[in-house]
Amino acid sequence: MTLKEYNMIKDIRETPFALKSVLEETKKFDSLKTFELKFKRIFFIGCGSSYYAALYGAWPLLKNDNNLIYPLPSSELLIHFMDLVDGNSLVVGTSRSGKTAETVTALEICKKKGARTLGFTIEKGSKIFDVTDETILLDIGEEKSIIMTKSFTSFCYATAIFSTILSEKIIGKRQKLLEESRELVSLSEKLLREEDRIIPISNRLVAENVERFVFLGSGPSYPIALEGALKIKETSYAATEGLHLLEFRHGPMASVGEKQTLVIPCFLGEHNSYLKNFVSEFTSKRTDLILITDSKEFGENVIEIPPEYSIEWKALLSIIPIQILAYYYAVGKGRDPDNPRNLSRYIPRF
Image (cartoon, rainbow, N blue to C red; front, side, top):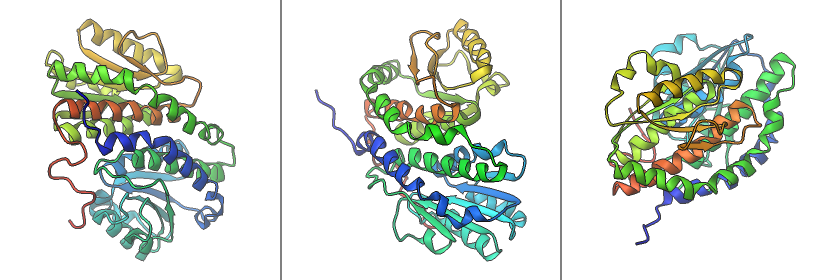
């Protein structure tokens, strides 16, 4: 029997086209007036998947000690941190629809307080254009599913490049990330060819009635782990959580022994021994592990990401197999991943 193909998987397959379009748009970044200014504090905000994209996008700046960097949910900025926003602040807001209530409201207030505001969206002429000094429109085509897939990857890609350019201008040093960024289009195409290999993994999880998932990441793969947990939860309603890799050992490991799967998109570079030790420990406890990493040495349930790139880009690429995994798991459970219950394309009020 041929399963119905939902828009979600079609959107995922359009990721290379989306990234190519984003790459073309980033060539215009040098003309942004934002880069001519200096800031004391830089905020990256969004809601849901857009917040996780903001968290990822802030990563290239987090190691830069010249500025205070705050990646926050838009609502948290509104409720708890607005007193920190002033004329020396940059606030970068991400919204697929350009209409997300908390994000638009936060940007509007920040602009009135004298902060520089910058937006990322895929919706031309949306509200975010009215509340920002500059808005970057990512022309990636319509995302037909309610679920964010290619738009999430595109926002991560665009905001990370933006942050890298800003970091270069602050510290005056060329960043390797920019040189590698051009490779992501072809690398995403390569990962999409792994779809047939990922389907049996999803089918196994359905057959074994796994209803709990823990996604574990570290560094730039931590927001990817959060997004992975959200993708499973949104599309199949399974219980999920996202944690820092080694934090799982501090409390959550009490859940080992229950029927659950650990999904680990993780790239530790020179600290890879920590991942090896973790895998060894939990393999000995007969924990079901799915690794998305850049090494072949971990056994069967490994989805490999090409090893010769920076951990930031490897982390981002790992979202593609996670999205595919979530899609086929949801379909296998009989869910409609395009129209999850209680969800809409954006939240217009709060």
